[in-house]
Image (cartoon, rainbow, N blue to C red):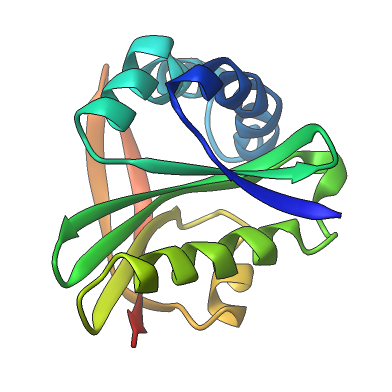
Length: 166
């Protein structure tokens, strides 16, 4: 049975372990090995995760199957009317088992519970990411696109997807 656990800084090692098992597998056909390594350190070092959680108001929610952490979602409020779905990832062996939907639906509920009124959620998704159809099936629409430099000559080539939340 799937359960949801709000993560704390005590869960940083769990998030890092999940990320190392998910992120490279997800992007190996889209990004170079060098960019994957760079992005892993940029987003998933212990220091980066601690800063996200303690200073940048990221909320991580872990999906568990029994005692095993199998995925996570990260949300960040931009302002009263806008939340960013920063990350949503599921272990490859659990993909196709509705874990992504479980996390996505709980993310929407979390936003509703922590917002004062109608708002929107945005997500940056790589234009080549096969999860694009998943987000569209959940009601997100492509609002715009952009190429965003992230350092060391790398950039993210993303669609910015959006969903109104009532």
